[in-house]
Every structure is written in C-alpha cells, then in structure tokens.
Amino acid sequence: ALEQTSGFLPAVLVRARALLDVGKTAQAKALMTRAWKRRAHPDLSTLYQSTAPENANRAKRQTIRFLSGGTDRGAQVAMGEYLLTQLDLSPARAALEAAQDRGSARASQILDQVPAIEAALEQEEDAAEAQERARGRVQIALSGGQDSAWVCASCGSLSKGWQLTCRTCEEAG
Image (cartoon, rainbow, N blue to C red):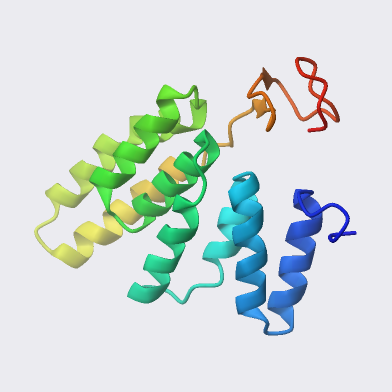
C-alpha cells in the first residue's frame, strides 16, 4: 500500500514503525524525511524524535535538519515545539511566531506560555533546578491540542477537518 500511496500518512507511519521495530532506523528516518518534505505532520515529528537518544548533540542536529525540511505552518510548529523541549527559546519563539503569522492557533497557545518558561529559567539560582522547572512549564505549554484546521496540500485552503477532496480545488487531500 505504501508504494502506491507514498503520500498517505497512515501508511508511512505504519511502515516507519515496522522498520523501527526491526532495527532499521536509517530506513525509517529516510522514509519519514521523504514524507515530511511532502507534508509536515505532528505524528511524523513525534515518531522521528523518538528515534533519537536523549540529550545527544548529533541526534539534536539531525532532528533540527529533519524539521527544517518542512516549510508549512505544521513544520514551523513542530520545530518550535522541539526547540522548546531543548530550552532553546529564541529560535523556538521565531518558529512559533512564523506559524502564528500563518494562522496557527496551536502556535498562539504555546507562545502564550513562553514567558512562564522564561520566568522559570530566571527564578531559580540552581541551573539544574531552573531547567527542571522550565521543562515542566514546557510540558504544560505543549499539552494543548493540535490545530483544528486542515490545510489542503494543493491550494492551501483551510477547512475544519480532513476531507477526501478539497472543496476549493477538488484535489485529493
């Protein structure tokens, strides 16, 4: 099914998980990267990030490179979320503001929480405690739902939910 519908996200996710389950991480990452470039989606971001060991600089660079491959608002939100988890606040804010400018309600929700994250980092004298407190604030910020709008990959038209065909351009969704 994946070969015939390489842009169908559920098929990509199933195949990528299957590859990861048998230890074929490089193939899974390549598959996810191709899918991400076609259409960024939070589930792809989450699965890709799950392949990286915690706090590894090389893995962080690979994840940022992966997320940078998408240019739509979903990719910008995913980049902002990832950078927040790394407590890299200035680039996170920039990515989220770009997504907000493109109409992302999710980015607006998260941006509302950034001052609390910054305050958590500044309030503690002990750097480790400050980071732990800030990471707690990041989890709160990221606990909201995803954007409720669906964006047509062909024409960029918005609708309240996914549709088989776009009502504006009538292309397959």
